[in-house]
Image (cartoon, rainbow, N blue to C red):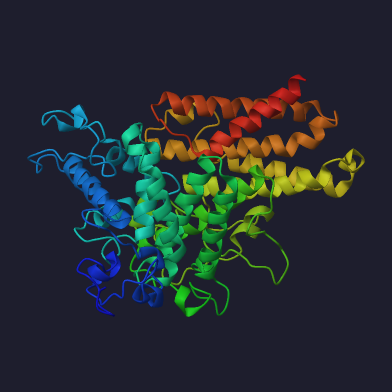
Length: 491
């Protein structure tokens, strides 16, 4: 028997060994990890066995090295070979061992750029620069761990390599675990990075048809964004700063217009995600618009393109937003048609307006549903006319209403956002005219629905022909929406 209180060499958990702390070897969780709230990091290894954390960090190091090589080919003198870290006895991949050939598991690095387009609102050059810092996950100069793992999760999800995809479950586990603890950490960007990670995870689950989990992460993103006061950026309301909620959830003042732009884009990305999937899944959004005097209002200005924030331009009619400029009631002013200097003409703003409008139209359609006698009542007719006019106004801000012309937009990223915005506007049109088309009262409404359904299909087909291998999940969901509509029309 061993001496009481004596722990054999190598008997400490991985977490205590790395922190050089005295470990009592208690299983399944040692006292040190239990007291520090690190239960998920308390792992024991035997012999040469590696822990899950070690495996993940080793894999990340290899992926980051490969990114560095791909982005700086003139610096890299030798290729970085990625291998399967979960099975030491697996035979080597011939393609990965050839020194003069491209590795068969290069897809994750290549798809990281694609992953940074899926609801990614942070400044991409800054994010990429911080990702490539030579520090371990959790270092303040790197992105928050939850965000790192979420980005790599999406890169793996977009990969076509089966050996890379075997790691997907491990990265998903770590991403969701770290997302749940992100706000309790000390990372300087924990709030914004936590929201970005939640958006990526929600989109991931929606893309995989795991809607309950997707809704859970959307709810987390909405609550964090509102708690941090991101709906009150540049608010003209008295006694309202940029932040709200508890002191732990407050963000410092942005360092520059780019960082402020990240917050504005983040706020609208979260609201767009919340409203689109609430309508698509027929449930109540986490944030409901209301004109009630005590209701929460969104004062944050409409988003611009990131390059405009980088150039410190907010309102096109002003050119540069003065420090004293403030906005208020952004959604209310939009829905009521109140003119504001904040025009909201960017691709991000069009997408956000489309989502807000689709959700309001869905509420209107529910009021009309199953009660054809009410369709001629003046209040409903007036609301229908107002929503229809607002739809046409937003559609008119598109560079073109021709799906083929949208596909010819040179900037692929802007083209993709226009596809999403135009798709949502088309779905909103189908929803708005539904009660009148179903009742047989309006042939015009029926034609509008058919025309809008055709637009959605042409947009998706056009996007795929540009070589884009991935479609935003809400656009994918719209296909089923349109196919269901066509089936009803032909029945």
